[in-house]
Picture (cartoon, rainbow, N blue to C red):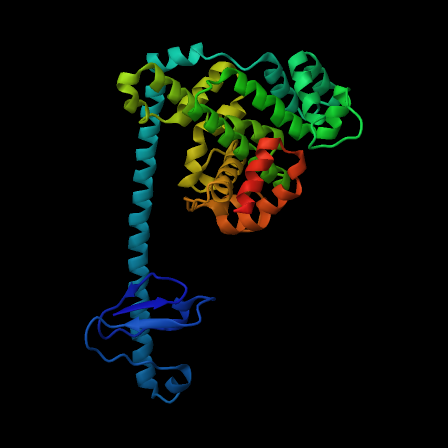
Length: 381
């Protein structure tokens, strides 16, 4: 015989002759329940008003049987919880062992030689990363960095004078352009340009860069709404979060005879190794190294110093899958990550549709043209 509520598909099994007190099993939300017998049996429901007519001796027998049934349920749940705890512990150890193997593989000569030969980000990109991670940096500092590189200054002015912004007079002052575009938009523009200058131009690489830009924009929006994560910091991390996939692509192109083997490597570990070699802050490469853990580990199990950024990146990546790729999200702890970031608990689909997409559309004008087109194209579908 089994019991279940309309709120849950979980079943509780009972032996013939058991007496249950249903109320404690229903919880606060369930309005109805179902009792099922696996063979011909008589199931008798006794409501509180009916039991009032029973003799005291019968009531005592019923209460004793109820206590026995609840005791058996408690013992069974404790046993199952113990098994689950052991399983989780074993799984965590298994993941830790795999993580170590991936780190050892990433440290191999083939991978490290390639990483050392990948050009570093341009100096202007490093300077901007440093300044925009420094909350004390002001507009003048940012402008000086942009003006130090003529091609960068030209790109910023070209963007602000594009037909999309529609200013009546041509803007020739970088300082004014920075004020009009805003720090976050300038940051996206400059870092994307710096990354594109050192990454391969193969179609697959360009697609990864496009994906990373969109995840960066969404994650930055989430950080701004949350107030618990630094928007420029998470924008940088998200823009670089899949750089390990590009390194893997380069490995496959260079060693074509063993290309399938590189798909077995952890691209997050490889990406973190590259960014560590480049000299980027630990707050960036450590988040990228552990980003995949948010899918199967609750936020409380992530490293305390990085869990907010990992959660924001995971939420941003999931929203990208829903909005852009129209995919069904994977992961059991999305709602927990939302709560950590200061949002109300919601399903991934509801959060993407009700919170993120409206905010993105409201601020659409400040995004680069290809980003605007991506969001507009998906909304139109």
